[in-house]
Image (cartoon, rainbow over all chains, first blue to last red; front, side, top):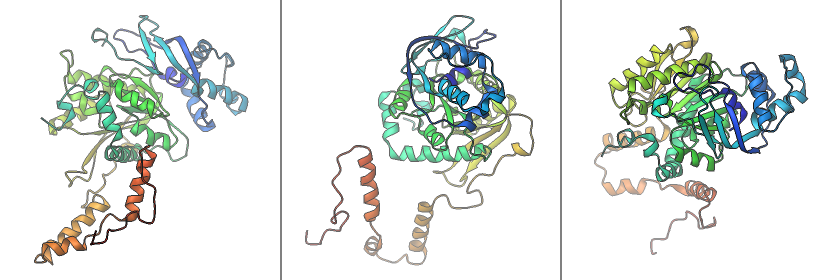
Length: 122
Length: 291
């Protein structure tokens, strides 16, 4: 699972008011090279929760992202490369996602998070 | 036993390892799925500016539909309830991210982040109650509600469905409308039993010019596909102008599959890693009658 997906996912357990961002428990992280598309990143940038992305990248062992950003930084190639690396190239292979309110763990195996809820959580 | 998989078992049980493999090794299913997803992507009517978008594939299965999205350069997130199907998707090294999830429990995505959603032959599963705790109405409501929330304003969702009957289609559509979607059903090839396909084309936001439903293919008697129409013509000439022609002559005039077809099939099997005889000058040659 890439951090792009992590940035979009929230916990939808019944009764949870704010299920975002999900915590990350890391067991294994892998990196996969992907081609950079500046248009995609520019288009996606306004929708990204930056703080969640920075925290998640740090948990995965990548601390190069700046704390504060604004859209003017999107013109810098150096920033785009870092943004791209954090968003699309870091994969959480094994571990878990944790609901911030209830602490419920969603296990991640082979890069696939299992977001199935139990019957009493729907 | 019914031929509809929906009536046989719940999706997470029906698509077990064996079924998942069967599903993905059939070239016929692959072709149909690719066609369906191409058409769905076309109906999604994304702005024509070559910018990759973030799309959602609901019921992505083994990633057959996602492959079409990747080919068009988009990033996607796929959701499916069957772990076996997702395992096959992993083997196929699809480019999107995969999630195990039940669409009837709601999608669990942040509001307004997805640029478009497609779903190929999945939503009709929601009409079944596979567990005592399942209520199709509640599940449809949760699904369409969460889909509406996670889509960006003006984004579209194209859901290809196989409703079992009129009531199911009405049910699905009414819950989509209740969630706030504008749009309707596009039917491709409505006059054909085989290639008839229904797409729910839903738009987020208030009705406008953009939300008008596109027209389906083949609505005005246009032929369904090339091979089928040619087949029909042949039948017609035989049955009308020449119906007293003896049976045997018909067979002789019919051409075989041809060298090109055989080479293509052999190439296909080679790509799949099968043991295939090399192509020689004898390939696809007709045997002499004395043989």
